[in-house]
Image (cartoon, rainbow, N blue to C red; front, side, top):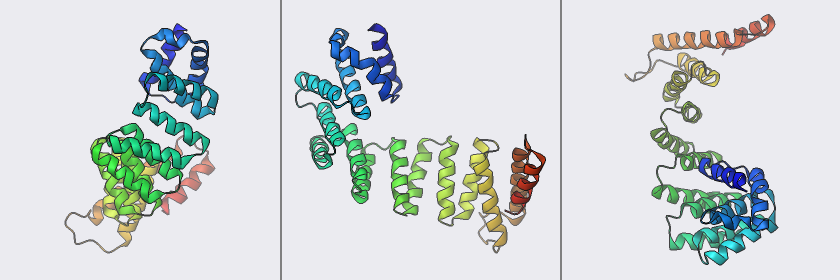
Length: 277
């Protein structure tokens, strides 16, 4: 029992979502009643196992855990959230939505209920409502960069690229050293036809992650576009000479990446393709 309890505690501390493991470790504790020997941690285990059981479709185990929590904490927002998740698992989405809405009417800062509401609205295909709910959530929980990433995805699904770009700017304010986020922002900018700024972001990707292939390809795409267009009169724009130098460097790095360990035929094909970008 001690080993299982410690493993469950470690999973909670790391925020790892491994429902199969949680159910395998927690089910014997719950069904034997040994969980109550964990004192205050017993209720954390009940909650942890309930969520995992819903994930793997063990409705009976989830119900047993939730009933124990309801008896101990009647009317608790955390327990009501579990009730909502149980309804979701049963396909009763509207009823689950009512529970989350009621919780948020009582406390709009309830993070867990707010996130469940957004996910539920998205699952129901109510994208506009999901976006509005997530915007409201981020007004209160600005530092949640994962929320901004999700909002960017939702805007992209609606082809609202300017809004998606704004979300990625907020993400980069919170996570400035993550090259993947710079790459996503660069690709959105390129989609918007903001090639000059996209080029700077693709360069930032390669600066943070040397020889990042998608970053190098992005640089090639941008320099190719900019070199074929009329020189910009904007003083902040990259000069034609610098564009040629950046393009040449990106080409050299791509060739070096693809040449490493490649067969001669593959190397030749890669060289022709890259040089014609």
